[in-house]
Image (cartoon, rainbow, N blue to C red; front, top):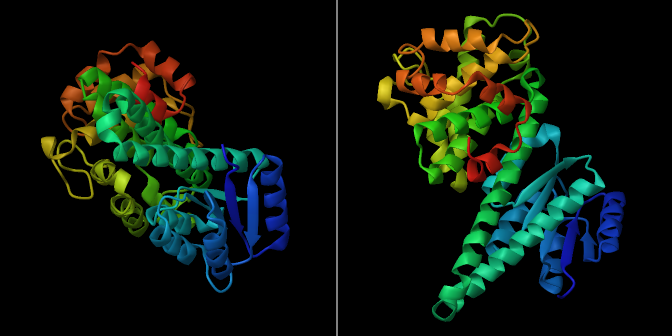
Length: 359
């Protein structure tokens, strides 16, 4: 296999030298430039397999370079580098077609992992394209391989979602790990209800990103230790609409957006933002509501210790028909307490659970 080529774009000379030295030590051929304009020239000469670009640079920034690359060669993966305070720009980069992003400062292993995943993604895309060209000859031999390749591509997107979840945890440390747990609980209830297996990844993404709109909520409200004022409550409630708008702009997350928009609706119509009632609320959002309440009650909070799961079952039962869908509650109650505690203690990637595990 030919040596894979990587173009490094960063206006800081020290970073360029460190990154290229590390990547060359791993056997890659590297070229480095200081801005997007120079990157365009080098891209034409080198024909790289991967571009690693900083966000903020003189003359042409990372977003403009990304737009140019997507038009010039949409198959070359682009990894953007940004700082944690620039998370909204990172989300915009993903919407515009970036494969992944890395937060500064990053570790060597984190860089290598992202680079290897991106290059594997490119290899799979190229294989898929070649497969399409020779479809008539290869259909029987390659169908199984294509299915596996498409699954890996989907999983590569989910790695990016986990990075977004980690960024959200950094903003709202009081609920660290909540996204992973509530996703696992949601998928568990969904499987018990009989939700189709091909809908589970969509539901997992929606549950994991249900609070992504809080990225736009000011820290003074999101991290306020005391009760919120009426105005602050109204601001906080906008996170459903904000999350919906974020996800509808990302093609592979559009199906999850409606669940994110509806995750604060109540079965009796007293929730928000649209006051949907009963089956007007998407089934995924009705399932999520029970899973979310369960995790909230059996997890520690700054103002109280975790409640016993028996208390959580009683409270969820009490709210059946008002806050929760009675049918979902009935299924939840049919699952033993030990299942939830074991799942909570051993939760792993919620996306692997959605694809492969049986609850």
